[in-house]
Length: 106
Image (cartoon, rainbow, N blue to C red; front, side, top):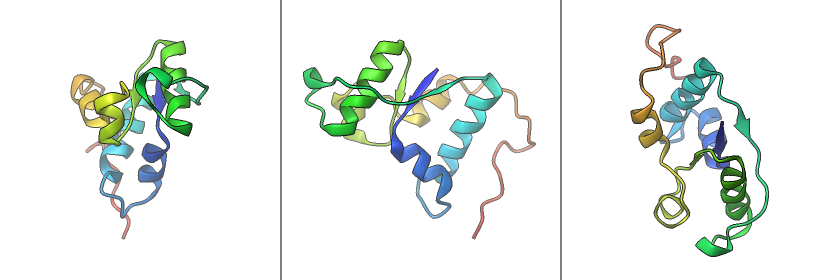
């Protein structure tokens, strides 16, 4: 199971986003592995997180699973992992669609 920050969902659906390709790849790997994607709950005071960030941290902690975010502040102090770091550690997922990345829409 993975807890995904909202910025991953946005990047996956926005081809102009700098993190689009990596976000799409993360969703592909999660789908190939059958990993459920979790929604947020509440916590995060210990890490001085604000609003929804605390919800993501709490959800990941409660479920005992990684929290992925492109936000460097959340990776540094909130306990989140960069999606690139997660993909690097889990890059052995089979490529079911040739290159593993959909063609980029312009």
